[in-house]
Length: 225
Image 1: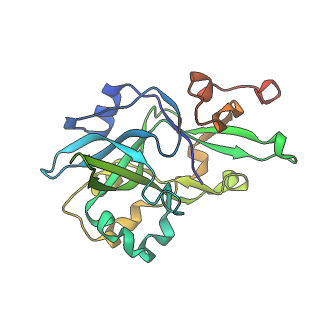
Image 2: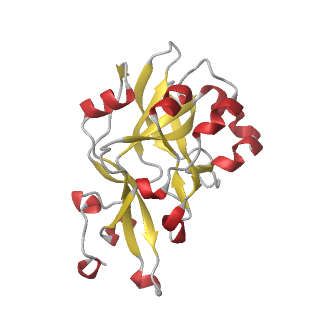
């Protein structure tokens, strides 16, 4: 399961990368995003504008298996997702995500930050729910879509977020496309050789730890335990 990611791109780079037409809320300089925290998503609003807005990571009920990650192979089997996959798809801006390379002993496990070289920000496929709270304000919560990892990365990282290319993002955010079957082609995992994983501090396991150290490459033997 993917339970941590980073978003460190500048606001301007995010607007350009995702062709944002309307900026409502933007969260950046986040080095250790964890479930239940509020971050930015890219969505198409009711007027057809590509919008950057805020959303909570984790659908309700939060304890549900798919609240944080939704398995791409199981989406069609979840009637609860049908409405969101037709009308409430989103893209999650990301600079890198975290996995764990397990050692022979649990204490030897190492946090790894996984990035796409030469892409300071990329988009992860997701979908969101929206409702009004007791004050009448709209509230959003999202999940990100994952798929099985490929290549050598699959030996220690079972799943990866679905990273979208430009064509995939255009279709995923197109409100005129409501047939999910035509979008499945965009939910393939990125080949592992196109990504880079490097060791970082194990302090990322603490959701309260928020520091540039979270994404700084280290020598494993000097790691903070």
